[in-house]
Amino acid sequence: MINLAAVITALTNQKISPLDVNLSGAVIDSRQVKQNNMFVALPGEHVDGHDFVGDAFKRGAAIALIDRSLQEPFDTVDLQHGMFKPENLSISPPLCLKVPNTLEALQKIAAYWRKQHPLRVIGITGSVGKTSTKELTAAILSRKYSVMKNPGNYNNEIGLPLSLLELQPDHDIAVLEMGFYVPGEIKTLCDIAQPQVGVLTNIGTVHAERAGSQENIARGKAELVQSLPPEPDGIAILNMDDPWVRWMTDQTQAQVFSYGIKEKADLKATDIQLHGFEGVSCQLNHQGKRWHVQSPLLGEFSVYTILRAAASAFVEGLTWQEIQAGLNTSKVEIRMRHYTLPDSLSVLDDTYNASPASTLAALRVLEEVEGRRIAVLGDMLELGIYEQEGHQAVGKYAAHAADVLILVGERSKLIAKTAIENEFPEGQLHWYPNSKQAAKAINQFLHEGDTILVKGSNSMHMDRILSVLEVLT
View: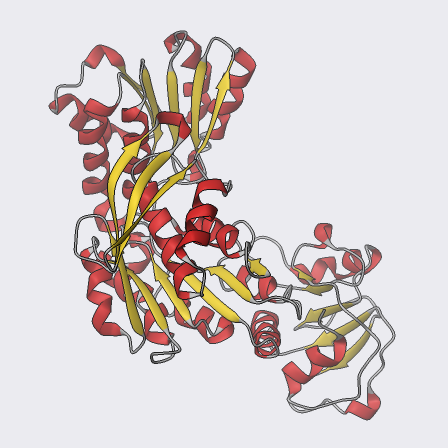
């Protein structure tokens, strides 16, 4: 548990006497404050955290990081411009610490706190599969080690530092998902987390609108393997089936441990068997030895998740027997959820977000099921120059993966056009401008025993359709 003394040392490089103020983590939303939290007042586009410092203190926050003056008369210690004098420190919470920039201060504190823990850090990045890889890797490693992982989508310049402040002395390994929007972001996260192991999933076109091109995305993701220490301390776990990830072999001084299905690799999956909603099984092959594994993860694409988690566990010292047992029994939360509604309706809920790669992976799962298949697909956003190409790729695949297509949003017209060009029957294709209208109409397309995939970018609000499905049945 970090304390006030460590926070001040991190921000000022001055060692001070221990202060009897222990902090129970950090938050940026005053509504989430728990007793003795550190509240970080971040300015935002629509809301400024400084306006909620008072609320945070009422809810039990011990200290608040601020970078501008407040109207409320809270005790404040100014840590700017060398003004801090340890002998003048007041330690009676609630206490504000004034810094030049609250985000940079949060990152400094997290970097300092991480250095106080001599643990192994595994960083995971890529366009698709980061979260499932993080969850399965952490689950398997937890069979032998005390593991910390960043929750949910805490994978950016704010969430990752907040996660690191949860580190405890008994943690052996941290498994950290690292998100990417623009070049330089992964390097910043690595500077804070100091990973020894870097796992690359794949390089898609998601966020191309911000990054500019797939090449820029690859270069941004490569910052992870470039930040690793040289071998033998650093290990890069790379997907040989993805050309852009394969290129990263020459971008790191770390040892490379490769995985794949198609290309030659240190760890390869063969004999892949799909078992519908029961999961997937395969053979893992390494140095002439083979292990049969079975997992509740859905679809052939999940084999890559199995490979990444197995590789991470292997380089961290687990035996293949331990890995095999972990893969066979570990139940992890993944973003695609399967559940059954009345009238034997099966739902594949993949509404968290959408890119061409993740949508194609979801369609492959749908394609594998028996019975009538309905794909409800919304626009995929932030694709930049790949917008047309991405939607066309989805339309081409959806033409044979689904029996009914329900499309939402202007961009999804590209899916519709391409699907029809690939001989999808026009009478089974239905388009709506938004998810609200699609939700109103969905009932008329449902038959007993159908399987329904729902997927689209967050801002398309595809979860409205799920809510209606649950009410209708």
